[in-house]
Amino acid sequence: MNRVRPVPKKGSTLHDYPYATPGRKCPHFWIINVTPPGPSHCLHHCLYCYAQHAIYSDYSDDTLVYNNLPELVEKDLKRIALCPPISMSNTSDPCQPIPELRAEVKRLVQLLMSYGVSFSITTKGDPGFLLELPGFVHYRPKFIAVTIEGTADITALLSPSALTFEKRVEVVRRLSGLGIDTLIRFDPVFIHLFQAVYGHSWFDKIEGLIDTFAGAGAKHRVCSTGRLSKKPVYPAHGVGDSLWQRVLDVVQAHSPAAARCFQRDYCYQRGGTSQGYLLERDLRLRFHRRLRAVVESRGMTYATCQELGAQECDSEGLPHCQRFLLPFAGKQSDGRFKAIEGCAANCHISCRGLAHPPCGQPKLASPQPFKVSYLRGGRS
Ligand code: SF4
Image 1: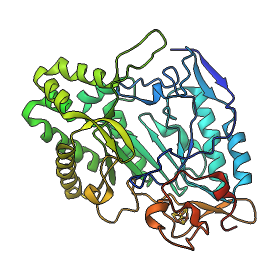
Image 2: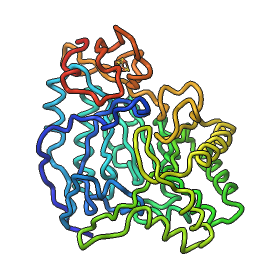
Image 3: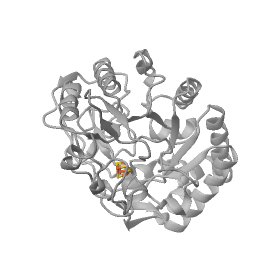
Image 4: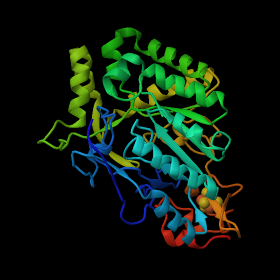
């Protein structure tokens, strides 16, 4: 294991996803990364991970962990009147088994709860350490998303250093049993890898997975078939394969025929919120609709992550693709925040055209990333 080195984060963390087109599906979020992006800062090393090679990646050999986040975040909470929901760590897993990182995440979550703001955590690790925080279990609004990209065979190929499949399902069971809003990200699902490993029974395996998830108490499932780049990634020691090539290689190792289909079916596409090599659109739509029917028949809801519009394949009646409401919160006279009633944070959909949205800030009702100046006004 690399040496762990706590470092201060410089500058504010207050920023949104970069998506700006009407095809945006993500609500507005304040993204707080607990490490820099870069291959040494997430121990999972998932085969398909683009965040390890993001534009501002740090390629040092040490595992860097930010050690001043609560102080930085509190500074921003003091200067805004409207607080977006917070998405914790999109560049690395915030529940990795690194004691320094978990201590910092605990401090941060404690701060968010003391201010009364909305937050979500996405992980392939064990968030059990957060249950030690007084009030965490019943705190709302929050949700936890557990990423499980397939069966035990598939997760062993794609994310072998994260928690095992069985342990991730156990995490879902434990959190759901405690009444914590928990969803499963089936993301990314590479259908050719399922076909390579399971042959003609590949979709039966997926149906079996859905039964397992329903049995663990999950209420919602977000799915994507992945977006890959053919650009070589740059690990610390020289040029590496592209993410597309890595996935192809693992499919090829199990079935050359499935690998040929993967090469044919993952085509370059531009549109919506992103570009890259995606599963061909008709195949994608057919797969998602088939899967949605199975998921809904087991009493869960379903949505796709970005790659299809909500009206094309998401379960009806969802406020956004992640199901659980994480509203903006408005500052109260004591400096704490309170969730805004009637807010879904999906501003350009739920408040489109409203002169007086519940938050009091009509400038938010756009797919553009929020500007900090919008958060200073609004209601108080
Ligand atoms: S009330 Fe509407 S515009 Fe305001 S933050 Fe919520 S969703 Fe966005």
